[in-house]
Structure formats: C-alpha cells, structure tokens
Image (cartoon, rainbow, N blue to C red; front, side):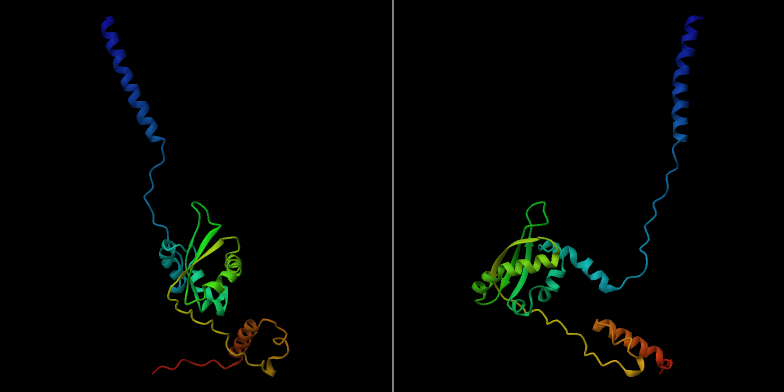
Length: 194
C-alpha cells in the first residue's frame, strides 16, 4: 500500500498548483478595451498651422516658427529688410547658447557685425532667456518680410457714449468697446436673403 499512497500524493501536488494558478487569475481585474481619446471642441485652422509647420521648422533648426514669421518685429524694419533668419543651432542636448545663422543681402555684413550684439539681445528678449549666444552670417538672396500692418485709424469717441470710454488708455480696447456699444445701440437688422 505504500506505493499507492505515493502515487496519490504525487497526483495531489499538480492539482493543487493548478487550483492555485486558476485562483490567481481570477483576482486580476478584467482588461478594458482601448478607447480613443476625444479631440475636444473644434479648432480654427489658424490655430493648427503652427503645429503643422513645427516639424518642418525643427528640421531646419527652428524651435519656434514665430522667429521667422515675426522677424520684422524682433529686429526692426531696417534690419529685417537686409537679413533673414536661416536656422538656430544649439549645442547637443541644450536649448540655450545657440548660434543664429542669418542670410544677409548685399554688402551689409560689415555693418551687421557691429550690430550683432543688438540682434542677439533682441532675439533673446523675444525668447525670454539666453537662447542665442552668437551670430553667423552668410551672403544670399533675402526676400524682405512684409511690413507690419499698423492698427486701423481710430475714430474719435462719439459724444453719446459719454466720457467713460475716453478714459481708456489702450486704443485697441477703446475701439473694440466703441464698436460693441455702437452695435448694441443700433436696431437689430434681419439678414437679407436673396
């Protein structure tokens, strides 16, 4: 009888292991199916353009595409007419102390060498930190950036609005408030359908 008992004892061990494994599986939470995150509200195309162009600008060394699009605002009209940013190269693993590569038209390089510290200061002021440490200049064809559009001519405040809007110092805010007040004062117009 002793050999029979050893067989029974041997059969019980694998059965206990199988029960222990099946019991461990039942304690895990069920796997949830993947749900795609929602995109949220609709966005204007103009808000998406910087995201679309970001990969292309990074390929050519620009962390922010706004350096190219706002170059005239950064350095001023005089320098924007003869220079154009080509790329910004940073040291490996850093986002500060980079080299700004400029394309310069004509024989403006000697004059711009004297103004290079001012260009570096203007670009760093735009970034908000010391992103650029030096400037490299190369001769090439520069397409002048379009001039910055001045704000629309502001009309004087109508007398019927009173003195409350005349005290506002910001001309753009005052104009917006004047238009809003004029729109609220006007009789509502039905849209014309033709």
